[in-house]
Length: 219
Image (tube, rainbow, N blue to C red; front, side, top):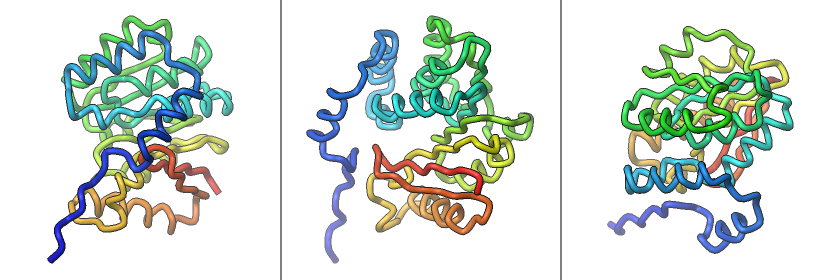
């Protein structure tokens, strides 16, 4: 039997990623500090954090949609929430949900320091339960949470999505593991992609940005 091949942390070569970052709008100092704090406090788990390029893409997308309400499933330490909130008008609203108190402690501390923090509502608890309490429409939905529940998050969030809104789902290539799934998470992401592909309610495209991003709209 051949030995399993190591799974890279990023599917895009580091040199290409670094080149892209050098030719993207730099982060504000507070978000640079947030990334540094996340690395210091959480170490290797930082691979869960959205890269600056992807978070900037979400910000540009939110602004292009003229978004007034955004829903995020999976806060982590608040990086993507703060990036997207910057694109909202002053009376806009971003609801972000996560279950992990350690992640949310960091997120809340930086949200409190941000000029866009007043736009963000943090909901702590299982996201599927939180989603049951929300009313749409949301102009942008971003999903980046536990992979085993991706199908459930999609099914729960789609009715909340505005008619012309977009849902963005992260990690759909899962560092290449989708090609040879082994773990429960691997199979969950493959099942999610197939679930969306079969859904007649939506149009979707999978992009190779970052760790893979699925863009979903109502058909």
